[in-house]
Length: 489
Image (cartoon, rainbow, N blue to C red; front, side):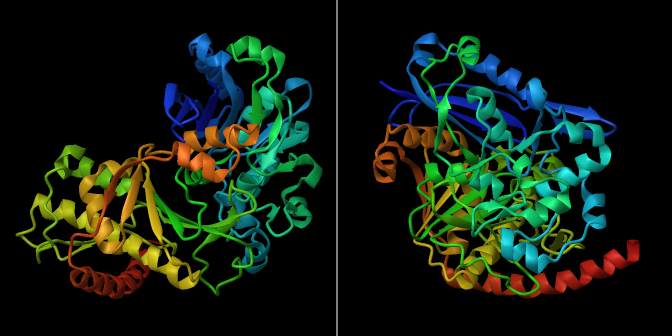
């Protein structure tokens, strides 16, 4: 029996799992992803993460570690790790969500059309480009010591293999990567204060880098012949585990945010779409496919916010009726913003007869309506026909949300047994790279299993009426939000 080790370095928690050839978990470990706080800002400490990873792997049973054939790593995107000489590592990596780069974003404006055309991204402060400028401006001596920049996934793989790498899927989120030619974009590198040679060599996901270092094998108990395989962006690893590399399949990821991702056969769809550019584009972990991705900022966050506000727990949704009466308020889930700067959330249609259940249903309805807006944009803008929708993430445990979403989208939604998918996707990349699976079809048939399926159960005509109203009021709310912004500016 050959085992595969998958690792997911997550925003809040890191998970390490050992899988058998059928994609079933044999053992797992998890721990909070280490953060350090300095001057009111939070940073990841790469060597702190390594220490916890090594400790966690070493705690697995030796009989399992001995039979691990290959390993790989998925991680959050946009985070950069600096590596210097003699084992020196930049002690601070800026989290993807950090706002500390907003000043750099304001000071270094870019041509959005040029950036979008080359990188598939619209300039935002969270991308790696601005993180490099922050390091250059705030810690110039440490910045000068860095010989190579890589992703968090690339850094973990480097520690295990001794080989520096930057996979295409994570490079796609840096705003430094020429998507068409699969090279670092010299012009953008120069703007960030680096040369392309200081960015780690580029690789497709699922490529063998080598075997693990002897000292790491001794530290962890892993077999010295364990292969180290390039990993990828956590969302794309989840897509691999969920079969979302097949034509017409879409991945819905319901966590703090809620995103949609579809697979494209080429990058030619990556073209400026006027002032509003609703999708980011990049490389899938399944080479040579690309993806288009977008999301709503407040998905599970809005549910958690509601729970806190009402002093309830998630169990309250288990008996929630989906009866959309006239007392249900219309919720606009912009608690974490939206596509325009002034966006703020709102409830409409509140009255003295609005009860707790109405508010709960209204929040779910608002999330489903906003997601339908996104879903229809995929169909309309990308000319993409969704044949199958697979939903992963913690939000899949909320039955009322899932049932209402299926009805609002008029789409059957599949939830896989592995509701997260990123860690499993990393393990499957290791399996593909090491030759455990001969091809994607063999991998998928051996490892993919469905936990439950949600089918539309509410009348489509009613869903369409709610959506038409929401779309109209969505535009009206933008005007009101902009007026409020001017008032408090």
